[in-house]
Structures are given as C-alpha cells and as structure tokens.
Image (tube, rainbow, N blue to C red):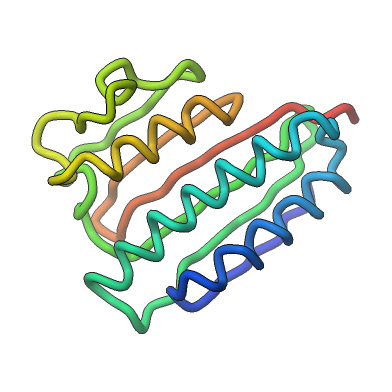
Length: 151
C-alpha cells in the first residue's frame, strides 16, 4: 500500500496544484484514463470546500490530502480540514456512491452549512467518486473518496 501525503496553504491557487498531483498519482496507481477527469473534479471540489472553510476559520492552517493505492484495487483520496464540526453541525454523515438524496437539490442536511453551497459541492463529489464517506470530527471535516484501479 503506497501513500502520498500532501499539505498546502489554504489559498485557492493551490487547489489547481493539488488536482494536478492527485491526477498524476491516480494515473500511476492504475485508475482508468476515462475516470481521471472525475478524480480531478471531485478532488478539486473537496479541496475548494476545505480552502473556503480554512479561510473563514483558520487561514494559517494547511489543508491535508492523503492519496493511497491499496492492494484491493482501489485508489483513495482523503481531504481533511481543521475546522471542527463547522460543516456538518458536528454530526457525522456518510454518503453512498449515489450520493445523499437530500443533497441532490443543493439543500443541506438539517443543521448544516448555511447557504447550501457546500451541500451542492458535496453532492457533486458524491456523483463523481465511486465511493464517498464524509465525516465531521472534533478535529475537522474529512472527505474520503475512492475509485477502482485496473491493477
């Protein structure tokens, strides 16, 4: 199991760099070429959400990414922020590969998010990744996404 860890300053211009790195690692990990755009878009959405949260609450803290190609034919990306409980009202949430039904119209789950824009982004991520798990912990929010590999 190979893991690449990346952290970057919470600046919008670094999201593009993160997308490029993740796409390169996904390609080397055996993710099919037809899925690379989905990987790039989902990771870009997750990183943009984390950057926005950091800019509001902790602009000096870096956004964290963990990229893993495991032996179970999966490529996994975890995007973590350090904004405790901010986005999901402190409640953990898990979405299926089809995405949470409450988010498909851009509305947030009860007690979350405010304007609904984060919920729309999370729905987009759920539609792009093969599997998605979204959780809010005392340390921050974590979005875990995965795609199949050909290896």
